[in-house]
Amino acid sequence: MSILRKKSSFDDTDDLAEYVYKEINSSNIPIEVIMLLFDTVFHASMETEEGKHIHVTITYYDPSSLSDSSKSQKVQVHENWSFVPFEKPIVLDKRNLVKLSNGADPWSSSLAVSHDSASKLWIKGMIDQAIHLESFINFEGETKQEHPGIFQVSIMGIGNIGVRSASGQIATLKRGSLLTKFKNVITNGSVAEVVKEISSNTDDELYDDLIKDEADLSEYDEYRVSSTILYRNSLKRLLNRIRSYNHGGALLITDVKKNDSLRIKYPLKYPRLKDAIKKYCLNASKEAMYQQDNEEERTSLTEELWKILDSKKSISKEIKGAIRFIGSLAGVDGLILMDKTGTVNGFGVVIEKVQPPEKIYLSNTLTPTAESLKEIDAKELGTRHQSMFSYCNSHAGSLGFVISQDGDIRAVLKVGNKLIVWENIAVLKTESFRPSPPKRKKV
Image (cartoon, rainbow, N blue to C red; front, side, top):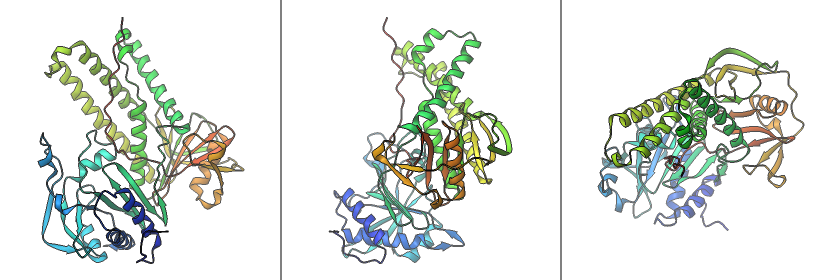
């Protein structure tokens, strides 16, 4: 029995409200208020403003605790968010939300909303400095910023609403379906094994380069930093970047060098992402070696360490630029082709002359099991999906990602003799990553 009193013809928003209400039950927000909020946001998502679809984020906050987050910090963080009040509160309804969306880019700000004693919703002002939290969530920043409010609601597309809190993504309502679990296939499971294969090839390349330079490898081995996590994060950033264009796209990672099944409209060689990742790993290893060898000087920033850290910072920017370059290639019809060294070999690639698989299975687990598989009909998906299914089924070890225009991301991989598809893939970050340097081996 639902705890909700139905007030909307859109039962799906009620389901979302019920789930979020249970997840944030430590707050004092009435369920009717959350219902009204999501119903309003859903209706706004169906509108356009000046010919553009609505994209906006609402921060729902507790009025009694409203403050500049930096005031609660022992050490002031200058880029933390702050509340910017309106001179007079504005009623939160569909019309006002649509109008204000043009002045509230989700990467810059959010609308601060709360309810009054009569359970009426008001837009009290705005939250600034959103770029830092968005950068962290999208793997473009390493420092986690304080999350404003109790939770945030974002319009990400037509009928597409996402809800998140400080602990991460709570739920997404997409095309009438409530999604509460997101599969981290790039980090664990069968898909992650292919990503690990790419990183291993890059690690081997770096090691070979050091040998050619006649470097002393004995100490480097003790502090070697693998590229695995960088590739995981870069791949998530790339998929999320392609999704942000709202026109769909596809990425194929395969070992096949010469194949009649691939017609490359725009062949090129772009190894810059791989090369930048190699340089980052080398500098991270140097930093670990330096820190261990100069324990007494850790409190001071020496010239040598400053150069290492400055180089890492510069390489991080290079990685960001390379990811954006690759993502932009998805704007052309056809897929982006990458080999298992991490090098892009072309874009506008068309798959042809391959037979479709007899059966396709959807997996609910990161590593498929007989119990976790459900047979699906490929005809329910578009031609972009069907061609990727055909190629990956015919070329074992090839990993495909298909991004729909509505933002769905699916991974495709043949596991054993079955073609497996994963949906609801996690491509956003919720916790800070700071790699620990390898420990020195004891003699």
